[in-house]
Length: 134
Length: 134
Image: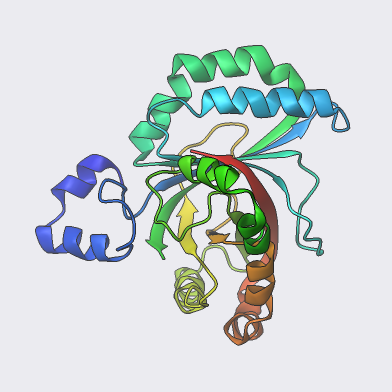
């Protein structure tokens, strides 16, 4: 749901959506746009490369439209269905698809890709629209 | 970081960690355990199957140790690096790995798998430990 759609909803629908996540800050959307990126490093055993990417993501997360960011690495869990072959997880919440598009074109993002894309051999992105939350 | 580690930190470290996410509810951990599951339905064109899975996830999200849950479907974004071949995204935040293990063995979760696993042909799980947040 983008911001415009949210505003155009009938008031009772907006109230119902707000009730989905009563503990969230007032300014956070009830149903965020979720952008999850997994990085596979070109040199997966290089601690220096991993640190460089993590440091670059610290800068990248300053892009103002990013509502929440979680920079992570694979957990110790290990079952058949778990993919733990990636090195870095980059999970972002946006208020809307429009905000995610602003992020994609933001100078800090373009600079991040230009300066650091040599570090990874593969990225997989999953974008999802939240239907329901807890 | 599990709850015990968090408590055992020096007070100044806890204060610094809290500053990472000043808008979060006081009880939320600064660096959650992130469990992201993507479902590929056995019958991806079946709206009935999709609705059944979404409804089942509504029940599943009542497992008490789940701190936050986001049930989603692929966004309209479409670039080379984006995987939008899945049908349902199930993103969970836990306070710790220990809580995620409680969830895995919880009766509601076991019942969910038993009753609904025929609906999907593939699941991929990415578990990550947050190093840093915004």
